[in-house]
Length: 218
Image (cartoon, rainbow, N blue to C red):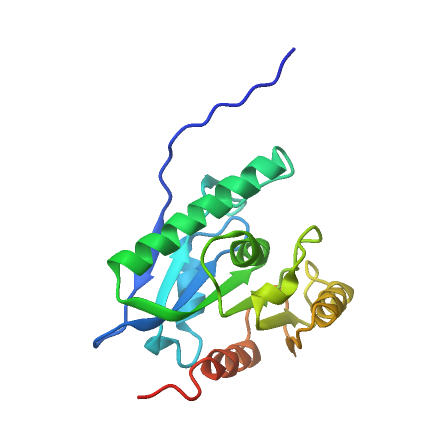
């Protein structure tokens, strides 16, 4: 028996929320967790203090399914055909960001934010994609172990709730050590909570985002 693959064209879905006023605006691109939709990640992005001044884009994964709640959700990838899926996902995100930069009043800096499974996608987009990110924010998800050249993420925030069962404290420490070894000083945020955001996370995320705009002319 021979296993074969064939390339087909499919459509991906993403949401864009543009601030009022004249751009270009700094750009914040989000990647949702397993079984979620773009709407949930857009809600997360919109809850960050100061994000109303950013053009926000939420990218939905290419693989839809019915999640355990009985709702339509999506998944970035599984272990099956992993390398192929990574390449396809990176190419997809490249095209989304390219379309947003061309069709919307999107500008620099470009910051990527991934939650849970989407954290790996944010890292891969920053390190393997063609768009240069000014920073990467990871919430409840780790840096994929096979990635190198982590210094190209430039500025990184690592975040987890102290009761998070999916992104353990040891995993966060390991990611922080990898970043320091690459010459980066990660912004580490821990807060009382589980595998989702909490008020302390939103406050820390707002401070991190605000740091990209310091020194910009009004």
